Length: 271
Length: 271
Image (tube, rainbow over all chains, first blue to last red):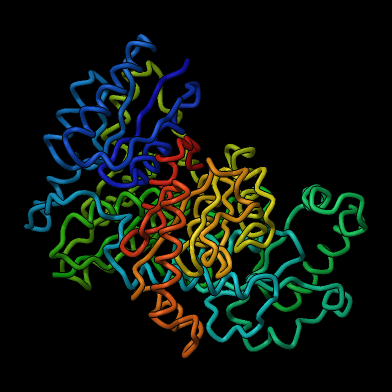
């Protein structure tokens, strides 16, 4: 079974898409063709969106599903004219929140992914620059770091750091354990002062060999033997030094980040 | 007025936080202290969460607000025992979706930010590596690029590329226009074959000078005069070459990305 879904928003559509994907993931037997309709913030754009949904309705022979975060009643009404199943994301919560807070919803268009909080936004951009400058042991001054990821090459450190920085404004650095560190089974001296901010990543050796093979085909670096040795030594080192470790083989950067924040008690917020 | 909010989830909590922040942003007069409670996926964790919420209730003298994406009824009931205002994100939509799809919700824990779709996840990680390798004119082979951002130094290209890659698996490169390009007012030869994938970023000169001053204090690079000249020449070049341009001064990377996707017709989806 296939169904067409539109994520519609007066802003970026990220909230609609996030909650929409979460809802749809709960219906495993159905294939969803999803379309984004962002920045629908005036009647003529709403009319155009309505027409597009109607056209799809005619093609599919089944009404499309609309996941909607527009807050303007009149724009919602225009889109509802398409005959689609309308799922209004905010509607069920506005009334209980108004009652609870004794305040009226401002009715402004959805600004949660805009530049409302400029300082927080700046912090994210600065953290991203920080992550880039402190990637892969480039700059090893970790005074400002909220977290320093350690692990062997290609264990998932860089994407995780970028994610934590871009989303949460967390200053995340990463240090790749070198053959020398692994031989000696000693924490590099420069990491010692930051012990409480260290977090280790590990990965299944077979998976690591695959990833490295894509990057440097036929190299010693990519052999299973080398991967196994590095990972074993790294695990030993981290256990000995009491550094918490997470296996990234079946864990997404979103999950890794959440777990790191939980462990280190970082209460930074998504912007 | 201050109110305490908990984002609670059986997974990362990203969906709860995204929709929660969007809802709360609509109540401008209220300050919200928000807390994340991710991975609440068994009764004992739910009990602990309940206790934490109860404690906060007693401290505040006002019931906390809970934005919840847990799907297990029994876990929800445990947390509801705290006396908080429960806002169940999925609850209002499950019934209409079940009726529409003629299928039962699977009841599985929220897996939308896990590794359900391994291929899509891989595409995001690969795109992130691509963005890093093709950042700032490093590698200028743009054959694989979905989009190539052009603009002067510090106009917002790098964070935007990383965002598009990390979230959408879009291969985003960026090329900084050099003094030489700006002098000649000519599109660099290497960009010509990719004309249909070019997108320009610009920024307010005063803002640009601030950003550059932080980076290289007292440099010619950071003077308002230099910023103004570069931006004027870049705008002229992009107009002449018919490259679409977006001003990033008051626009977040989320908004910029959405607009670029819309313009270039990129229908890639958030994972």
